[in-house]
Length: 353
Image (cartoon, rainbow, N blue to C red; front, side, top):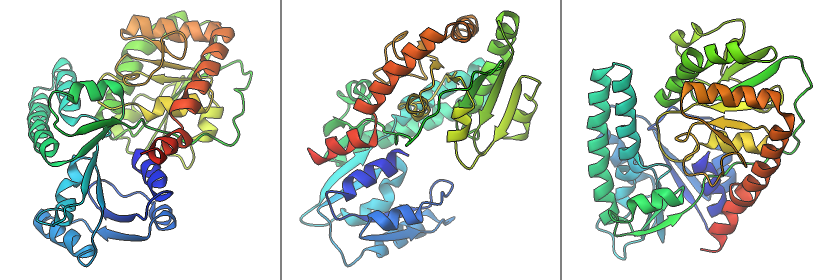
């Protein structure tokens, strides 16, 4: 979502050629790219990384560029043919949607607290690898984009490049319906369920928070969990008041069917687009501190913050009982996302560059 918003903003002011490397699971975005780019080339997945990098270099071998904008550290090797040994060298911009070394260190802590020492060691190894890759990139690139002021401050001492904040952005829905006045209160979690921080968040909520809500809830409620990549073990969480929905064609109807959004995330990095998306759909949010990190949202004004199972359950019940609080949060959060985290706001920043 971030890369798409940034690409759209760039394409309105510059002639953009896209090089798409198959690093992550593919999404059906080819039409979006072709509508906004002068040219689009795809590098197919390969078991031989050097072969993939060679093919990347051949895609635009007869063209030169004024700026090379790279999204995430993993894409740096595929971009090197377009600036390594080339004179005059193009301006090099690196877009980091999170600080991967920090995210992996946090992940190691969550694995360790859950008793999974092998995965904790693996995450620590990835954190160290990411730290080395970041250090090398910070010496190479002229400009680094980060998604929050807190990330900028954390990188300031490590990075010789110019660091700019380019906040994450969401598209504001054309039409948002208020929640139905149902007897059953609906909680919603949205996220890629194959991504461990989201999977951990769902398990944390269902095993540690949900039993406390059941004891305190003033009315019936339902928790819906939406997202692709869910594993079979998450289906074990299904209960009378919990439904693991899995992948959906559109998230809009699920927001409209819900009264509040939960973000019980305990690890990860960057800023949670899921919170911004909930703001745009006019739904109040209960989040952990980590979940709301990097977003300029004030507790009890834009979002409810809780980090322990007891506090998270208490805030969920508080929201179930107080419709005026829910409305206040929605109004404030809606203004915040429109002013600072919409695609229109991002385009203004890029156009002023």
